[in-house]
Each structure stands twice: as structure tokens, then as C-alpha cells.
Image 1: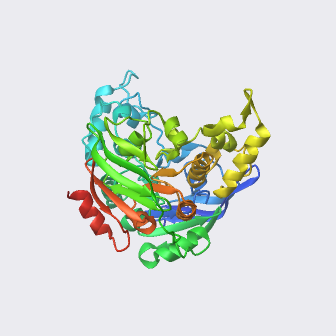
Image 2: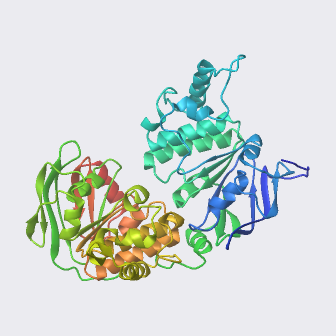
Image 3: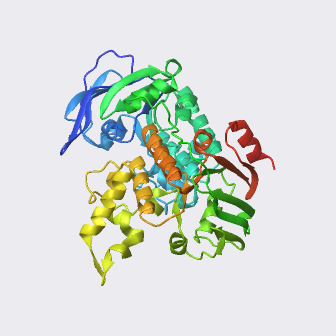
Length: 502
């Protein structure tokens, strides 16, 4: 690392940063300025260049062009250690934690405290870990195994780890993506505390509520380019969205008018001890039923029961008026019920496989004769389905891991559409995807309903529940609290009241 001094109002400044990978310009002459003691939001669609940019700041990638200034001093980072030595730390959405090590070991890994005899000073490390956690308002046990912590608690440990390196600049990459509203609030308080202590935070998020809650300024990247920086108080939602996607999204919730058909699916008195009780509802052709409620209300558990993932103790399931029994997800698929899980990476996709293989996996028998797979026929069908959901990909051979979160979600939709389905269940379909991809997923949902599918959307996002649903089912503590038979005129307040009071 080398540097020369100049006067600056910024603790961190990047000018004209360009990063090129084979065949791809990942960053194209981008700029960024961070003040001391500010929370600065960095926003953009998946693929906008945010991750690459962060890796430039943290020394993972060396840019082909551009300059980095730290407190007015020109610097160059050859590796992550250089960045760490300059008091820069990053907290990633998919953290770099070690689940089988203790909280203390995770906090101090790579910069362990030692005795004068060069042995690890466990007593001192545990004491300092406890002090760091208490400083940010946490009572997590430093001796606890990292793997036993919740996602929110792991994020807190990652923050403690950043502080332990004496970081003055902390990058938080989608830290709220997997957190409940209550957990988000806890994270907000920690971020504000760090800001008030003079730390500077770059906060990357798809969630507008994160930006409005925390940031004083927002910078937007689009298509690997710098679009602009604005005061959060001085830019409207609509303008910000248009800057992020390069076009106006006049109707983020493109709900097509559909005449509701007959009831095709019904659940009666579905129960599983400790999870949900007496759940009863029906779904019609051509409608979108939103299922919502607070975290822990039992929404996902009910539908995992319907799919045969975790069998219910009692209750009845009807398809087109006929009772069916489902003991396994394969049986549910054959009956005509498809399920898109909340965790697309662990449950929805095989990331190392090509897109075509992922899409055709549930229906492989359609392309198989005498144990031989007709690859031409398989790939043609996969290509057709991927195009139907407007997946941005070059080839059916592209790995699922190479796609953005929004496009991964589209692949799962394509995978489900390959089967002969009547009911499609989408569990948090827009979780962790950018605003442009959200609009596209909503469009796909609307088209599915118009085509006659019965669509069930499990969602914690109130705006999309109100924007997309024909009817709304609210759950509380494992039971149906209320069903709104007409979503028109329903407000967030009405839903929250139903979610909190029986």
C-alpha cells in the first residue's frame, strides 16, 4: 500500500474506478464519496456492479483504472489485508462465519490475542469479545457455538468482528435481507450507534425502508456505471426507482384484471402440534391469495405440511373437490401443486448445475426413454420455459450460481411451470431481489393467474400483499386470524391489527 496526501472532506473517495473481467466490464468509471460519521446507502439492481465495487474497496479486486483516497491520501490495496490495515471492514449477506467455532474465535480469527509466550490468550479474548458485544447492546455468550446462533445474532457477531479490527469504515452488504422487522430494528440501532461514534458506513440494500430509516445520502449504480448521488430527503421513491432501473416503472404491481373461477383447492382444519392449528381456506382459479402475518405466525409451516415436507397431524386437503393425501413433495407435484421455497439457493436450485438441468429436474422422465435422456428435447424445453419467464442468461448451460437473485427466482418459476400444475405456491417470491426484478416477478405472477392458475403468495412485504392480492389471509400464532375476501380497500393497519389481535 502506498499513498500521497491531499486535502479532502471525505474519509473515503473513489474516482473513475474501472474493473474488467474477461468479456465483462464489471465497473465502468464509477465514483463514490463517503463522509466521516455518515451512513451512505448504495443501491442498484442485481448486476449493477455493487459487489465488485465493494471488493475493490476491500482489496479483493484491483481495478484497471481509477484512484482511491483515504482521508485525502491516495492509496492502493494489493490484497484484503491492506484494506484491513487501513481500518476498512465488510459484513456480507452470506457471512464468512465458521459455524463450528465459538463466537470469540469468529470475532478474533486472523488477529488472535496472544500471551508473551505466543500462545492464544483465551481469557483475554473471551473478555474482549464480551466487552465488544455488550458495547453494541448484545448479550450473546462469547463461548457459544456460532452455528447455534440465529441469522440476526450472526450479523451482530460480524459487526463485533469489524469493530475488533478497529475499523473506521464498515461496509454492510444486504445485512437485513434475512431478518425480521424486529431484528432489522435491532440492526438499525447498532448502525446508528456506530455512526454516532464517528464510524462511516456504506449500507447496501434492496430495501427502500433501510435507506429511509438509516441513510443521509444514497448513491445509485446501474449497468456497472455511476448514475448519481442524492440526499435521501431530496429524492422521491419514483425518481430513485427510475434511476436504478433506467426506466419508469409506472405500475410496480401489474395486476391484470381476471374473472375469478371455481374453487380448485381447499384445506380444512389442518393442524400440526406446536406449529399451526385448524387452518382452513380455499383458493380459486385465476386468483392470487396472499398469506401474511408476523414472523413466526406459521405461514411457511402450513404450506410445507400441504406439500408433504413436514406432514400435518390432522386435517383434509381437497383438489377440485376430491380429497387427496400428500406424503411427499413428489406426490404434491403429481397432483398439480407446485411450491417455490423461500430459500432459493438451498432448497430451490442446485447452484453448480446448468440452468437447463435445474429447470427439467422435476420432469426428467418426460425426456427419458430406456434410461437415456434426450438432451436436445430437454434443452429445447428448458430454453422455452426460461424465455417464458424472461430469464437473463446466455445459455441453458450457464450455472445457476452465475445469475442474480432475481434471475435465480425466475429459474425456479420456470422449473415449476414445466410440470402440469393447477396451484402454485410462492414463499417470499421477491426476497432479496431488486426493484426491477420484483416488477418482473409480479408480472409473471399476474400472467399465471390470468392463465387460470391458482396462485398462493406467502409474503411479509405489506406493499406487495396489497398490490398483488385478490384476497388476503392473515395468520397469527399458527391460526387463521382473518381472511379479507376482497383486497381492495384493505390497509397495512388492518392487516397488522389482524396479525396482532385474534
